[in-house]
Every structure is written in structure tokens, then in C-alpha cells.
Length: 173
Image (cartoon, rainbow, N blue to C red; front, side, top):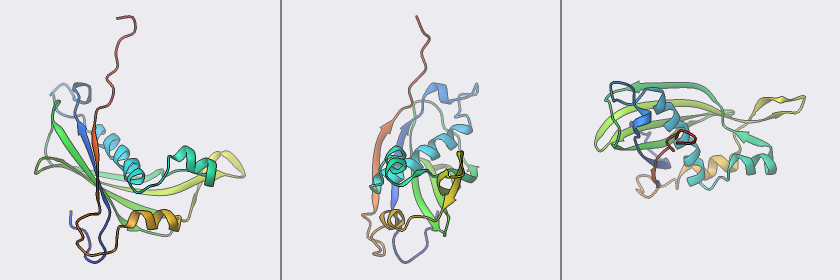
């Protein structure tokens, strides 16, 4: 991915070790897991920018999260269990009510998949609390997530620890 020149874009690196349960019978990662990992990386991006959990933002501001409006993924190379991968996440575009997140999944220098999500900030609809509605992107959240605004600073990268999804175990076994 080539980021636009000018102000740097904050990036977050999410590390993950692939588990056996995330693979299909061919022993390669089942495609939908990339979308799960991208979603996790999206939330971790906001945490790295200092944004509290959505439980806290709902209590304090009514913001319940950032639902996905559109998702795309291009699969380039396969991966299998036991491999360590990294998901690099950045916001490539901020709009009035939506923003576009870009994800690159890598195993070392090999790009496995690239994904793009269009998301929005949502609150509960005051007329029907079972529904949600979009709000303009909060400026303070956007400012926290933009980066330092110094071209090629090299320090706007945050890195997460290797995470593994828990493996389901049989009860009573």
C-alpha cells in the first residue's frame, strides 16, 4: 500500500499467531478469518490512538462503535497454522460521516491479503433505541488518529502483542 505524501498516517501493527482452528481442511487460513482479524486490528488501532472502549464511549458520548458499511479483501498468498502474521492498519481517508481503513496482512515480507473497510461512527437512534444512526466523525477522535503531521517521521507506528484467539474446548473433557 502506498500512503499519500504529506502528513504521516498513524499506523498500528497487530500481531497474531494462526491457530489450527482458523484453518480449513487444506490447512490454510479460512478466508473469513482475515475479516475477523481486520476487525480486531481496527479496534486496536483506536485503542493505540488513546480512544477508550466502545462501552466507555457509549456511556460518556453515546458512541456505540464503528460499524462496517463496506468491506473488500484481496487474497494474495496463503498462510497456515503456527505462523506469525502482522496486520498493519491505517485510516486512508476521513470523510464527514465515514472513514476508510486499510489493512495489510503480512508474514514477514510476504503480503498475504489487503483489505479495505468503510466504517462510520454510530449512536443509538433516539426514536428507536433498537436501531442505530450515523453521526459526523468526531473531530477529537479524528485528530487523535491522524498522526503527528510531520512527513516521514517514522514514529507514528504502534505495535501490539502477538494474540491468539482462544481455542474452544469440549465441556467435561
